[in-house]
Amino acid sequence: MRSWFQVLRPISPRARLTLGCMSFVLPVVVWCIVSYVPAVWHPQMLITDPGSAEYLQAGMHMDRHAFADAVKEAEDDHKPPPKGVPSNPIYLPAPHEVAAAFYTAFVTPPPTQDGPWLHQSLWHSIQVIFWGFVISSILGVPIGILCGTYAGFARLNEPFIEFFRYLPAPAFGALAVAILGIYDGPKITIIVIGTFFQQVLIIANTTRKLDVALVEAALTLGIKKLKLLSRVVIPGILPDLYRDQRILLGWAWTYLIVAELIGTSTGITFFITQQARYQHFATVYAAIMMIGIIGLGTDIVLAILGKRLFPWDRTLDKSA
Amino acid sequence: MTAVNKFVSPTMLPSYLDQSTAVRARFNRLKLREVILKVENLSKVFTTAKGSTLALDKINFETHRREFLCVVGPSGCGKSTLVRILAGLEQHTSGDVMLEGKPVSEPGKDRGMVFQGYTLFPWLTVKKNVMFGLEVNGKSKYEAEQQALQWLQLIGLEKFADAYPHQLSGGMKQRVAIVRALANQPRILLMDEPFGALDAQTRAKMQAHLLEIWRKIDITIVFITHDLDEAIFLADRILVLSAHPGQVQELIEVPVAHPRGTAQFISPEFLATKARLEELIHQGKAEDDEDAGTYQMVARLTDVTDSVD
Image (cartoon, rainbow over all chains, first blue to last red; front, side):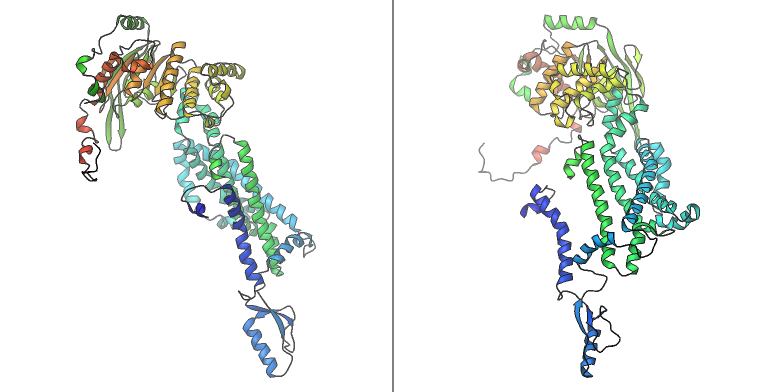
């Protein structure tokens, strides 16, 4: 325990594993307590039997105090009182319900006839993210590297990019729809706008951090200036560039929901809003968690891949 | 004044100008060789927002083929700037740098350089680091590989050919850096305090290693250091610079005989040379030495009776 609180010191692998699991277990434990221990919260009653109250139905949620009043009223009139069990509001389902929804969400047919299944919605979202991120990277990575390498090029581009990155990407939604129509075009555009400008600045900074002595060493070895970029700058920043791309991919995901609301709502966002409309909140939670699982899963896979790709990289050791 | 003078009175030492017949003959033979590097009236002015500073002021010297020249001087004398100008990494303001009669203006494969920091490319294996210069100069991959392996053999690191730089010790990294620079077969090898980051033991080994390499191949070395022992141990001649601005104070011919060995560190010629170097370097330094006088400023914080002296 004491070793967890040493300033700027690494912890043991065992402690890493324990604490890593705890970071997921603790929120779930809190959720379980709120869901399964009625004394903690449960501000409502779930009606099991409406009794004599005509305005109640079995399965309805109602405020605890209003329910007490209804019971008292019925008892005063010597009529059968309504019965119910304490419950949380409908928007906070219990863990087991959400766990079940992880399965049922995939096997439940879409509420509308030609609506997409969950796996189709997810796949659509992944494609939007993929294309948004790829288009942004095709432009952003080379421009970022050039900005980091050549101070003049940076000066020509960065002031405008600094300005543009403060413009919220969703603000371009209406414009994107007007230009690109209502399908995936504007959605991908929003993700590109949200990612590209940050990408240029981050990659330019990463490039600037390359040890200039490596460039000088290469120059004294007789390299031509044009080859410096491909033989020194790019290989030198590659592991950091890869790490930047991982972080940026995470950012691209955060733009997904807004992007999918633009034009015709599609993908996981369409699925979530649809489920919320039918008050299937367990499914809503499950769908939101799926986004997190896909995001974190991709990042872990990329991290492992990065270790394979860059065996010389030391910073990976420190962070892992 | 100096540590040396406490033990050996300067009057007991020979003059650093006295050379034994063998040493004199060696210098005569050396001076018969062609001049490889000629620096004439070299000046460098750094211009910043605060104004301009004269870093190097009319530097003149010549180096003969296969000579080992050390450059020493107090901090701020511009010795690093000088070597960077020779490498072509920095531009001089006026004067000439001629390598085999051709003016130097930008980096080139005829001048190899070893830096103080570790500059092996971390993404390349040891072998590929050595191949780098050969490949960018148009050698085929096969040829580059064969030569790289031979160079690694020369420094006894062929076992580490496929290791990455981070797997090597500091001394090994600098050995690889030296052969990486030599693989291009430059006319001159510039070394900017290459052993500065190494511990004393490794440093001594590296000095011996370097002399060994230098003896075996046709290379002229310009070696920057602030370690006077290192300079005397390695050099044929020592270029002493003064600070603010950097000017040549003296070009000393080291009277210590070859081949060099650690036993010579206490020889009279060695000590005489060191005494002369210290005299030159500490000369006029007292007034601008920020550390002067701090010793006396420390008040006694212990009980007067609590002393073993």
